[in-house]
Every structure is written in structure tokens, then in C-alpha cells.
Amino acid sequence: MKEQTYRKLERITSRNRFRAIYQQGTWRSSQHFTTITCSNAQGAKRLGITVTKKIGNAVRRNRVKRLIREFFRLNKALFPAEHDVVVMAKRNMPTLTYQQACKELTELFSRKANV
Image (cartoon, rainbow, N blue to C red; front, side, top):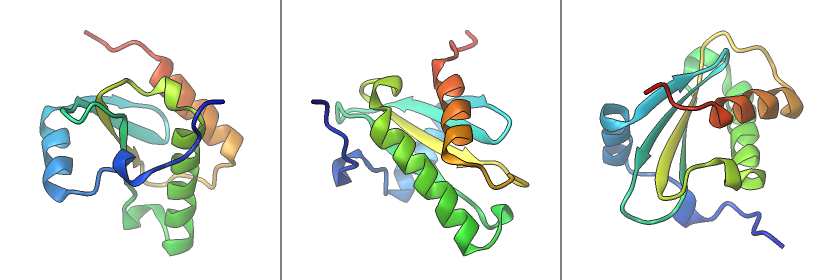
């Protein structure tokens, strides 16, 4: 059985690390999300989430964060190994169901990089 947890080691918490990812990472966008991927030295898949006040009140922001964390927890195979990934929610995002968010994020991570 594959591990389906979201451990502390799999979180990006440092402000400096977020800044480094923003500067060095590869950006991709979909209709409601933007992802930034950057390699790391820890050897683990790590997730960072950015949801600004432009999304809405605290209830909406927390729901978006829960959807992203649940997607990461259940779909770790889609995330690149030894990389940090920051998922940002775009402004004016409607209230998405888990299935809608999962479909959009799956397409975003399955897409090949434009090199």
C-alpha cells in the first residue's frame, strides 16, 4: 500500500525557500492554478501552497488549501521526485469541487514542460 500522508518533511515552510523557488523554478499555468517547480537537495517531493487574499475570505482560502493538500496526498506519483512544487491559486477562482480541482491539477502536472 502506498503511503498517503502529508508529513512535515514534505512541506515547504521557509520564506527563503519560497523566494528561491520563485526565482529559479519553472512556471506553468492553467485556468485556476499556477505551479512552480524547482529541484531540491533534500531528495523528497515537497509542496508549498500560496493562496492570497485576492481569492476571497478565510473560508474560501482554507478550502483551496485543503483541496491542494488532498490532491498532493493522494497523487504523489504525479509530482517530480526530488523537486519542490509551489501551487498558487489565481484570483477570481470560483468555488471548485474536489473533482474539478483534481482534474485541472492532474492535467497541469501531466503536461510536458515547454522546453
